[in-house]
Image (cartoon, rainbow, N blue to C red; front, top):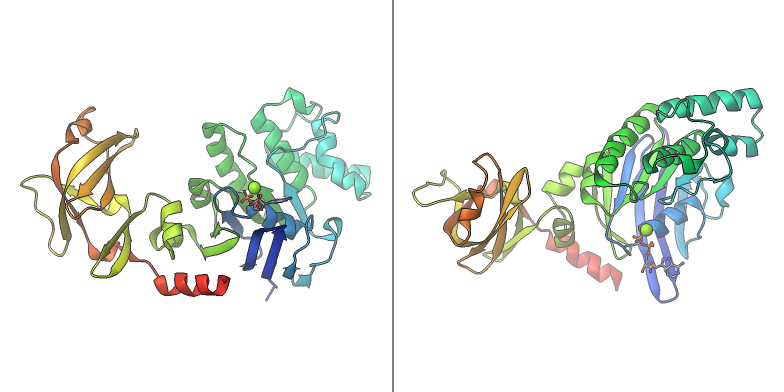
Length: 344
Ligand code: ADP
Ligand code: MG
């Protein structure tokens, strides 16, 4: 069996009093699209810089393809990094930017030209190789940055919020594009983002980071449907957390049925009465913020299938929220507690 593309073992890094990475263990398999997801300041960039070798850890071990690289300098690691600000060379053409790494490595001109051509093709920029970066759109510059990294055929490609500077529509297009490219070249991607939707869309697996620690690792559907901690539940999607009979659990908004007067719940559903406090129209769907009579606030979501404007009439109405107990997920306090203890 091939060794994993990346293995981190007890990796820690502090800057003065700030513990940026607080003991991370992680394995990324060859060919995976792996995402590090977390809020600003959670240690994502530091972790990526440690993997690339731009920083060295205070403790722990970093392996790439089964080799200990903990004290290997960046240029001798089989990684390439794509940064948010692209950092293209402004005086070089697109073709020269992409071929730069190959030239430094001493790859012969003919092979260089061929590989640059292939990389351009892959990011759909054929024909633009003579342009300068300032003659490109933001999305095109981003593609050049990607091509420049992919052309070196690294074992692991590290991407730090590479789509952060693009507007929403372009970002969504590039998300699919990146995913397509990754599948095609088969390079392992370690992708950093603070955008939960981006992480859910693109990843084979993801790790959720908070305060330099991993809260949960898993495929997107598992992390979304079965968050391991309250932090994960709250950070990914809208979290409805309830405590009933001493058990804390999460119900996702789309799993809640909002029943009106005269509507019956299905057998086996839990039902609680409440009042609609606020109605938020979000285009494809509407969010209903409901205050239960027992005091908790929950968010329910409905697709907008009714005539426009109907949803707003719900404000102030008495409703009942119903859910199937099997659609809830109990928060694992055992784990949360042992993690907290280990952190002391
Ligand atoms: P993220 O990329 O998730 O936003 P970072 O890895 O950039 O998080 O930062 C994690 C923590 O480490 C933050 O508290 C940040 O202020 C701190 N930090 C990062 N780099 C440095 C540095 N070079 N010097 C001092 N503190 C830093
Ligand atoms: Mg960052």
